[in-house]
Image 1 (cartoon, rainbow, N blue to C red):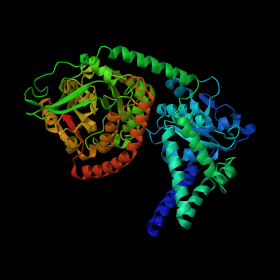
Image 2 (cartoon, helix red, strand yellow):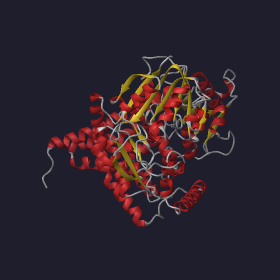
Image 3 (cartoon, rainbow, N blue to C red):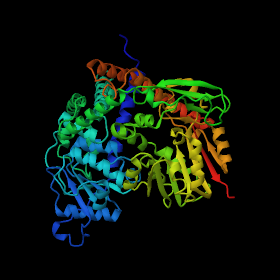
Image 4 (cartoon, rainbow, N blue to C red):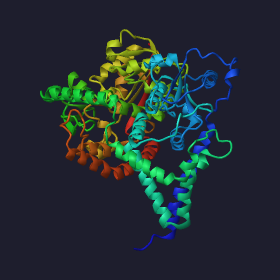
Length: 627
């Protein structure tokens, strides 16, 4: 076999070397950005503020002294923190490196949507946050995985007042010795997929071994940098951490990393053990039984009679745009979107009944799918900021109602743009109550928006509907409600999928914004402008490119993979078999290159959308006329 050209060898090695070098420098920079608590002898703590109102949650085997506790309270009060994760000074090497990969301390507090991260050994929390989060202040010591999950939850209740600090007087309580199942459990507690991370780690080790063997000095340099990375990032004079295992972890890093990856990969496919796993299994069994009973009556009853005319303009004829099954969850049923030839409105026909909507929404935004949906919404910070900033040239609102708020992610993020604005939220689901408990909205209204129109008449300066109208049964009634709730001169801001997008025709049924069976209506921009004018609004701004969501190709791959091999463990499907699991695994593995290519295409498509102002969605800002 002809060896690869020297230029390619050096290029590959140089890329690996540069990536490792950048990661090492980044880890060192982030480590030095973490505050270090002062070492205060217990005998000299008289001047430290009292610890009233604080609770320190610790892992088993961790015994903080009074001086550490009081120093942590003083630091948190001085910095305006309500949650403070304490890093033991002897934190294990790989645990420290893993945390520094996930957290940029310089941005952590300001990232209102960022997930809570910590070391898993000690967390200082105000009693007020614990109460709102529904966490008992007392109780037994926790396992590190439990504290990691708790830190993640607590940051949701202290979105801009959660921090990290190194506690020199705090010890981990013993040597680090994580088994594969324990590591997999800790990764799941942080919302991270153990199987995917183990595969990535094994792939990286294989790449390093390949360059070390085949690429001479360049490859050896890359492998050597990986080997020495723990000491370069965490060791040396002035390091605020003193990992007890730093020398061993550095000397045996390739072997230890390989062993950890193999153990995690082996444990990733197994269900976690313990009481929580038993409770989860019982919930899954009950959920599956409920779905079997409901599906025994068939899904045809979830659809209304097909209508012959357009619900937007009342005319016809109609043409079929797409026919698709449920590609989101793989629930039984088939759905049709038709388009009005007169006005271009696209709508589900026949549409789902209210009972059908409840059935197909169930376990998507809550229940079985709640955590995944929350993770997705938590990563849309740039989109939320763009929506909030659209209003900057036009006013400084005191009150804002976000309709279809879900768990309030937009309101939480928008506070960074409008810190003096009161944000309230409205939604059908229980998530709006959780948003209120978290403090992401001041008041959460649960129910249908038109039902609140008279109660909230004239009370808001801004009403927003972001990717909400397409989910409603009667979008014109929703616009009527918005007109009623807004004060004269108030602003209505809307974001919707654009059914006129070129990608809708290119990708056909695999275009993600069809989002069947949840999306009931897809409204062309011209139709929305006309409807707003009919209700006494003047459109001030319209954006297409900035509203584009870069998921066309990635979403098409995901929907196609789901169509070929639905989740074998879905409770509404047949009992999982080894064959179904093998097929799902094979499809997911085969889809990995397609996902990588789709990500590249979506990046290019997003650039094109921004430049041409033609994306897969649009935003519109309108002012209610003063009469």
